[in-house]
Amino acid sequence: MLVTSCVSGTPPATPSAGGTAVSPPSGASQSGIHKIQHVIVVMQENRSFDSYFGTFPGADGIPMSGGQPTVCVPDPATKTCVKPFHDVRDRNAGGPHGQANASADIDSGKMDGFVAQQEKGARRSCTDPNDPNCGGRVDGEPDVMGWHDEREIPNYWTYARDFVLQDHMFEPNASWSLPSHLFMVSAWSAKCRNVGEPMTCSDALQNPGLPTAKDPTPYAWTDLTYLLHRGGVSWAYYLDAGTQPDCENDAMICPLKPQKAGVPSIWDPLPGFVTVNEDGQRGNVKDLSDLYSALRDGTLPAVSWVVPNGQNSEHPPALVSAGQAYVTSIVNAVMKSSAWSSTAIFLTWDDWGGFYDHVAPPTVDANGYGLRVPGIVISPYAKQGFIDHQTLSFDAYLKFIEDDFLGGQRIDPKTDGRPDPRPDVRENAAQLGDLTTDFDFSQSPRAPVLLPPHAGSAVPPSPRPTRAPKRRATSTPSPSH
View 1 (tube, rainbow, N blue to C red):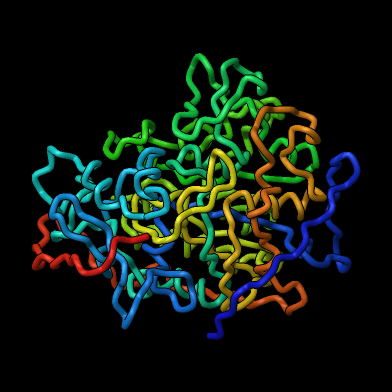
View 2 (view 1 turned 120 degrees about the vertical axis):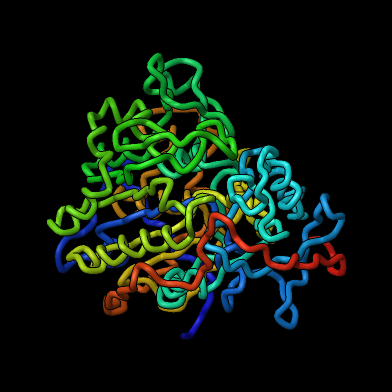
């Protein structure tokens, strides 16, 4: 398959006067970005770009020479330097992934803190070193240095080959999942001093807080659904019921908590936004089963977010294969529906999960960016075999939605009619690329690529795994920079 790279972006749509939403053309007059009538953001969990696509041909992957990594990360426990390695296991341990861990992993651009942070986050009471809940070594190796490829995740690699792979997608904030999901729907993570007063909110990358009985709507700042509702643009947030993939306090280990649509949680922040409640749109947060119904009935909203549960999230210790099967089932359902001919699916992972990545994130403002994560665009208008090297973050999803459905209106305190003190308009950041570069709206719509959900050769976990010989770490390469 031909693999190409982008060299420039497409200028964004021009906002309408006064920021009033402009409906996209309908019927035969649809053109350009407005051929996309449905945007679906599928958000998985806790994988760095190098951990999934570090060996993908043509991508900015793990530095190699002769097929061997030329970088390594210091291991304080063994006093050696550990190279990235191929990890065939279906279950990983990962590492701590809060704000302090991100700073330590990045280490002023050296990108060499991953092993030390994994060991720091390990559960010291564990007796089985192969237990991924320990957050430590697997078969003698710190698995944050492991990578998977098409042998373990063939469907993800097929989507990357047949559609668009983004190799400079950064999580919007250098922190964990809750702030990342807040950025996903609002381009900010904040904490507000007074209930319902957006001007009392300020940056909060680590602890924005969760809804409580005393304060059920702690998120007073403006989110994208406010603009969508005002512009008459339909939206839904589909949540897979089950357990939460992570701990509410960003700990590595905690008792599993249930999650279901409409109950505010780490992966379901919209019910905690003042705007969603004032607009009477809490009912737009739905169970995942409603996504499949909407696809069957032809009632898919213009904008959708799709969020997993703990079992299919790929958040350690969830199985990689379970996450890939879940995502494949969603993509297949879209492709089989009448919505496919006008849909763009943006697939990504909410944060790096402690896994190694060699690219230092750029600085856009005091809040980000965070570490690099995989990004894939699946659409009948997506370019084929295209690798997008633009600098991107989840802000680019908001920008695309705003350009497609809202005439270029931004979540901007100066123009959106609902001021808040966010430090900047993230969609307008000079570094941020434009997702229209990933599409060719002049091409005939691409045919579906239906894949078997259960594919790959990852080694399944065992209650009592046989320990493989310890891989010898090396001190030959220089630490990662």
